[in-house]
Image: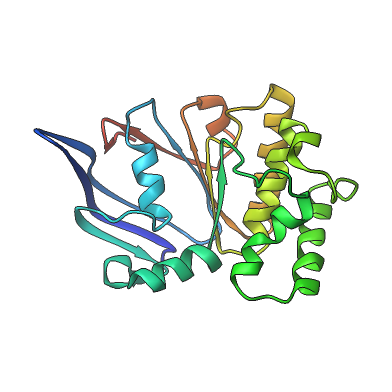
Amino acid sequence: MSLISFSHVSRTYDMGTVRVHALRNVSMTIEEGEFVAILGPSGSGKSTMMSILGCLDRPTSGEYQLAGAPVASLSDDRLAAIRSRTIGFVFQSYNLLPRTSAIDNVATPLLYQGVPRRDRLRRAGEALERLGLGDRLGHEPTELSGGEQQRVAVARAIVTDPALVLADEPTGNLDTKSGSDVLDVLRSLNAGGRTVILITHDATVASAAKRQVHLRDGALVA
């Protein structure tokens, strides 16, 4: 059974008198343990696909199944639980809490799951150690480089032990060295058995993945 299955998925937005066809009849599967890059220029539909994959939005038509479950049939509460426990998100802008230590930033998703504070801090510390930030636990975002902030964001994404990591332009704000380091982290996560989906407009970044899915004007082209 595929972890992700899109069957003729389309997403249309009504913008007043204009209808925007962000995704057009997309069918694809992603197996558990794959590392896939979704590649396309600005306006190709990547962000819309990311939102649907992450259960942040629903298709206008077609079916999205996640681990065999039809997402359209799930309640908002169930979707929120999936986002919390099954999917780890990594964004271009890091989205770290300001004036909050690295370890508390990483521990935040566990707070929403009701994990006791001692266990939250232990697991957050382990995730940061794994990403080479064991000496940065008490540092706030302003005290970290861009590459370090993005690694904190990756640690936050994996601290709940999700089956799927969605990385949306994770190197977009980084220099070449820091971007390469983050891609190495994603490769390592995948090598450990985690499914990774990388959203990018950059063919060089996409080459880090084992498979590429090309989007243009909302449709698959390769």
